[in-house]
Length: 246
Image (tube, rainbow, N blue to C red; front, side, top):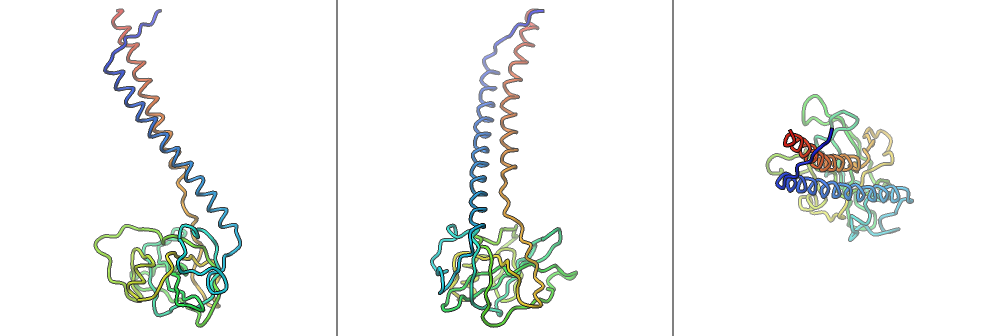
């Protein structure tokens, strides 16, 4: 039995275009995966470094680039501004809904504040009713990891005007600076070290999602589309050629 292939120009052009798009997008996704792999390695390297002291005794917090410090462990001495708690809502932890407590931390010896994500509180049965928490008084030393943002969640409508004790969807240092009049460093710190006695805040912070597997999965899908386009052209060409022979 002999097979005959019938070349058709239009299906050939269509197959080449689809295969080309699939290969280009597959390569792009592979490139994104490579970038995320490099970022993940940088995260691990920075997290492994000894804590960086922020403040008068170390590196000044003001004027620092958030990207240069992101994922670094830091140690700060100062005091919380207990009159300005803000609660980030819709922040699950370990499968349970709740809030993240954010609060300004004034670094000792200056007027610079750092927005600290102090920890997580479980949501009560009544929305907006917050469980009790404690704030250490006076000068304390805390440790944590620098993050560029507190993460973004979907927000419907315009954001409310910030005030102490407000429940918000998203929060950035500049937002709190405008509302409070305090001077803030351009980054946040996720507190990691346990607080004072009676501290009930959870600090099981999730690791930053790299999305490497997702990009690799998308790349595989695009490469599969390219292969299917070529395979479809070849199979239909042989089928058309066999019919012509008949």
